[in-house]
Length: 298
Length: 298
Image 1 (cartoon, rainbow over the protein chains, first blue to last red):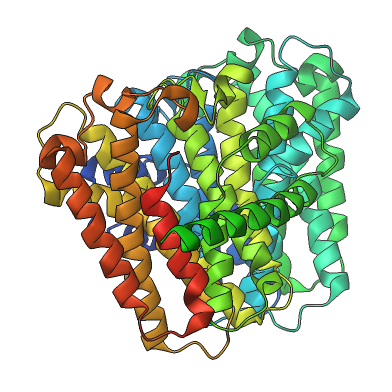
Image 2: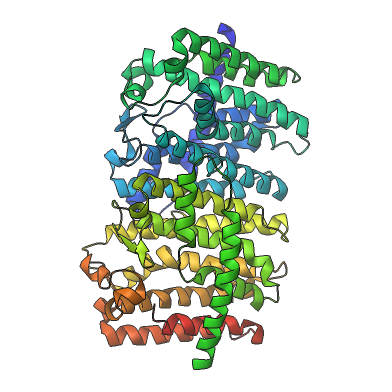
């Protein structure tokens, strides 16, 4: 496990550089509003672990495809993720002033700029995807369709709506899982699927196995997030420690206890690894990523 | 002109029904959050003239394509337009409480729901477009690319950013035009282009002529909007009369005088009609729409 963990961290670091270079390039446009461009760049380039793009690249690798082919889809996924954070942090939503160790976009700039930057980042994601090089039009169309569904009311935004409605409510584990499957799970699943779809010959069975992997991984990611919110400190996790509890947000440790949450995390890790048993060593990066998600400290 | 005006109004009415039926269908999804779905439906189905979808259908018609082929792209355009209105009305943006004669979305629901509904409507637009029936994958990809660029920082959102920055500023006509070309012009141009792109054999020349038509029409639409803001009454225009002036927003009448603005409107109408001179009677609906935009009272 330790070796795979180091492997994952090295992989993430390498991806981080490649992705940030590409994102920087896609957002270095001259523009009519400098403030809009600055807010967009601040929101995307400031930090973050780039887990979604890394999963996308790793899934392409698992299918034997050159990672470069997955670069534009990987950037599109990060842009969607970044826009969702900017909007979630708004005063009318989660009202957070700290993210990735820095002031949130609406604090560093202003609320209107944050709303507009989020909107523009979403458009840019679909722009990138529709113009992604080295793919067929069929692949581009399927990716746009999958990303749009994973982002919208059936996916991420739907999950954020449930999340807001459930503040102060007593949720059971099933309801909590439904919320997370939408809010973060849908985009993590899309990350792996878009990566796999860079292979024209990907089979339904492979897509389904990779979706199962991503689905378990997405939940594991969330359980670990909840545990870090209790156990981590503000400096390491980059947002206020204990902020979930302070907002009366339902969490896995609150429902299962800390030990119960840890056991759940281990089960999910095993589910993720079992789902991709059929893949050979080309999927080792995906395996390392699963270990990383469970063991990460921020 | 009167006959063409009647023709345009009849066309808009017919389009309105078809578009609303289709939008209703696309948004009748079962969902995890009823409040999100209700806010989305309220924001889209409540009213509005459906000018963008009508232009999209009319452009398809001008290319000899069955209007039904343009129905999904037309709906995608209206979803983008509707999301932009919901976000523009937010307290941190234009802070409007009345739209299309009804409370704005964040008043009828709440701010968080309005932000999320807007986000989900944008995703839904790209979802619809990527899955539009009766088109080739090439057509879908080109349309996603054009709509994404017209909506984002290079287009509509960029224009809204300039608009916010120019409140209380002295703009000249050129700067005002740049703002409008982005804020409303880009999407109106995309409406006509997406309609034309339903024809696989559309030529670069035809696209360019139709873009010129749409570009002039988009500006004309804005000049007439500014005039209505001064001359119309709140009940007819569905938002507070004089609200632009109250917010110190730059307008054509403020820069050119009312007569000057009317003359500018006539020039733009002629530009629009001249641009599509090369088309035969199949473009008569586009011509009627141009007359309508100039003569409309709301």
